[in-house]
Image (cartoon, rainbow, N blue to C red; front, top):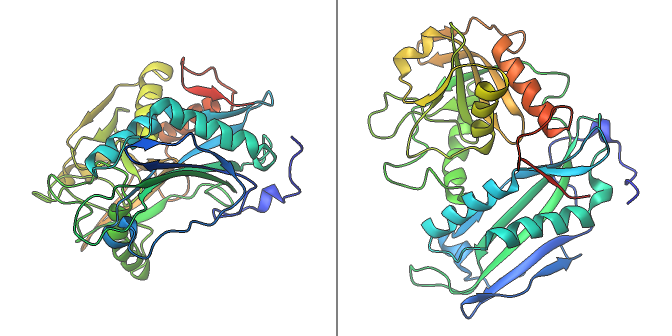
Amino acid sequence: MEKKNIDWSNLGFGYMKTDYRYVSNFKDGAWDEGGLTTDETVVINECAGVLQYAQTIFEGLKAYTTEDGHIVSFRPDLNAERMENSAKRLEMPVFPKERFIEAVRETVKANAGYVPPFGSGATLYIRPYMFGSNPVIGVKPADEYQFRVFTTPVGPYFKGGVKPITIRVSDFDRAAPHGTGNIKAGLNYAMSLYAIMDAHRQGFDENMYLDPGTRTKVEETGGANFLFVTKDGKVVTPKSDSILPSITRRSLIYVAKEYLGLEAEEREVYVDELKDFAECGLCGTAAVISPVGKIVDHSKEICLPSGMAEMGPVTKKLYDTLTGIQMGRIEAPKGWIEVIE
């Protein structure tokens, strides 16, 4: 498919309507066959479960044009599995894994003209989501649901190059103990909106949320997992039952061990340890890794040895290796790359 006439190098990270999206409806205990549509509007009852009780979940992944010209997606099977877990937690019907992957494939293929060319720094963002669609006035799960996938081309997360950010230790909690912090539900992100806007008003780029039980351990930010590097080069990520299991983080840990020969572990990370790390980054779909140069814990500033000028050396190797795998420059582990076209 011929590429659309878009100024790829000047794309921002925002929504642009593409030609097709995928829609499937759940009614009377079963999903219909689903299919593509050109209609981007969603029509629901004023009393729909999603509007009254926030019964909605979503995923985020990307499609890329590789160096050899193929359009691919990165580990969509893990997004399907995570959405399955999210659905179960919110008493929603599971959209089958195989159908999820096929829906992503169909939607991307139908919008192939919007997949940015290799080397542009841009990608096609893919948003699968599901919500309760029938009227619900009593507090209970909906009986009917809609699963949709839309796509939008987005520019590189870092305009003008990667610059380390400054974050603060937040007084707000991102999740409740034994709550929904480990699933990708819209309600979790709604909770974080005031906190992130407050951080911006105070001059910070992001929040560092602590564990809601003891407030002594590092959890995550509003939309990314943490990754730390010790002064002797070990990669460490926080372990907790109330953080989202990031696909990017899991991939980076594998890359650290299997591609770079680094020691890597997932464990509880205490706030008291922050001063002892050499590097810090936020990992997620949008940026892969956002380097952190400074952490402000109320009156105490922790300046990472990696500094505020550029990514630390270990973080840079992780970033370059994973993006190299995604773009086809480096051979991927079996099953990581789903070729679409």
